Amino acid sequence: MIPTQNQLLVIAIDGPAASGKSTVGEAVSRRLGFLYFDTGAMYRAVTQAALARGIAISDELAVGELAAAIRIDVTAPTVDDGRQYTVLVDDVDVTWLLRSSEVDDNVSPVSAYPAVRAALTRQQRRIAAQSRVVMVGRDIGTVVMPEAPLKIYLDASPEERARRRWEELEQRGQDSHFESILNAIRARDDYDSTRKTAPLRAAKDAIIVNTDDMNSEQVVDEVLRLAEEHLSLLMIEQTETVRAQDATEF
Ligand code: DC
Image (tube, rainbow, N blue to C red; front, side):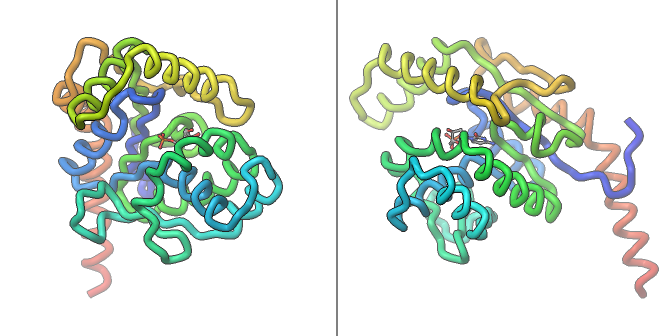
């Protein structure tokens, strides 16, 4: 790869629900000192804002207009309360509101609206241009950042993903039923991969990492190895460019 001077330092990680994207994305960004940017949080933020303003989720036009009108920022954590990042909607911290079951239940249709996707894609590119970033989502490699120098598609069988979710819930002391988790995962896979706008799929040049037989440390190590392989030249080049610019400014 021949790096260009202003090439974005973006690692794109896509994959289906419960494929480990957030655990891996967060660990990799921490190790590299990159911003961890979970783009799903933006779809959740629009959903939460619509619910809070009494806009019907079925009102595609109003939800699309809302997505275009609000400013959503995703930053490094601003409060030390266990969060992975902070989400601001028009400068108001909504981070913890995004995990409510009401948002869970309504975010899929919101994320399928083309006007919402267009507005959020714009905002995602704005944030990615500001820093070195690990971006996690469903369409980062295919739509949002097709020029990212490293695109990873994390995959695992529905059974393995359901097993991990089930284990996670059990550990939290929540009663859960494996078959219903598996059915929900299959339904979300179906919804995400068959929607008309930006369906879930691997970019042609994405590296597919199947994690069925890997634990999360092994996946993190593999992604770091790929980052080293694909980004190190680029990072050295950019650091040198910044140094050269600093030197000429004095
Ligand atoms: O990853 P998550 O569960 O927080 O994602 C919330 C919803 O947003 C989910 O329905 C998938 C969707 N999503 C999307 O369509 N595109 C993205 N880049 C990220 C998430």
